[in-house]
Amino acid sequence: MEGDRHRVVTLLTDFGLSDPFAGMMKGVILGINPSVALVDLCHSCQAYEPLEAALALMTAYRYFPKGSIHIAVVDPGVGGPRRPIMVTCDGHLFIGPDNGLLAPLAVQAGSEVRAITATRYFLHPVSSTFHGRDIFAPIAGHLSLGVQPAKCGEPIDDYIRLALPRAEASGTSLIKGEVLHVDRFGNLMTNIASADVERLMAGRPPADFLVRAAGLEIPIVTHYGQVSPASPGAVIGSADYLEIFVNHGDAAQLLGIGRGSQIVVCRKDHEKSPL
Image 1 (cartoon, rainbow, N blue to C red):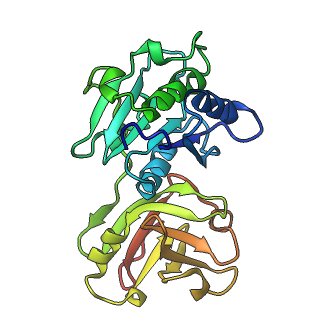
Image 2: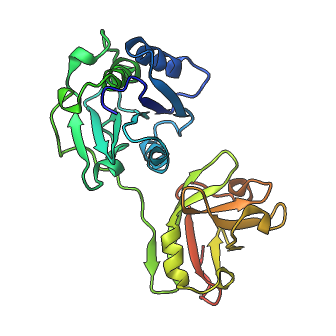
């Protein structure tokens, strides 16, 4: 995709849609490369929460063509000592603040991280409160025209690490995890991957297992309609992680839980968890 003026550039921010911030970033990019293909990945990430943005980016980027450029701006430290960085990972380029947001990508095998120091590509003057417009957007625009990452800064290995919480197996009958994200439908996305559930079940039917959360025992099903309306269920969602839902309802509201809440997947005959 080098030199392809029609490269895809995605934007992931916590800016929302009631202010012109995201649109201004697009304007800067289009001013550099009018032929770029801009995609709004999400502008309603939880404000000031790089971890949630990292999760969204990790689950979404692979559905874009190789060579895509992804700008991720959830940046409570804007204007401070944190650096702008670029990560090359899996044939994609990622641009954002060095606050842990890009760390789950940076640690992947074959990834390269650079501090962005090439001020000649910035928009001047650089605001201390809007690096999305003045640094990340113009860098993306120039990259889309074929500027090589090496011209944007030197490689680093002292970037901020921010690990996504991992589910833990307890013996052969139980997995402990937690809620990582609540979507607009109230579905509770956990950090328990489909591979974790498959290992636990070891060929046994899903009907032999359940999810325990907020004092409830929740069946594991294959699709939403498999439980009655207003009833909870657990399913492997589109991101390939276990999620708790309420058919035609809001699981977060019904269960009264959210990000960080503990979840257990276990055999039905396992001693009841205090969750």
